Length: 126
Image (cartoon, rainbow, N blue to C red):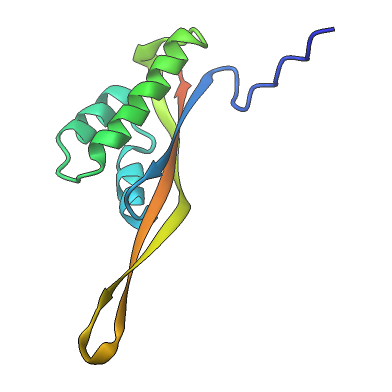
């Protein structure tokens, strides 16, 4: 009488990690997602480590989490992993304001975003 096991959301040779509530705009975060998309995970980690963008540390943590999920939960080989997908979504937006001249109100928008990274194991060709 136990519940059925949830079906996997990714393929048999894939693993996924997701980070929500990153305090940056999706447009800025997508620059880093495009930087690592399609690369081997070792090269992607190096690129994120030496990137000058403020949010690159959080993206690197998400990639390391996806690698750990692949290794520990799905028994995939870390040396053969590539970043199959890296995509960005919008999250909530805080609306703030600042008084401006002549009694006006300047609107300040503080966006949040979320990042999903999927890694896939591919065998190297000889």
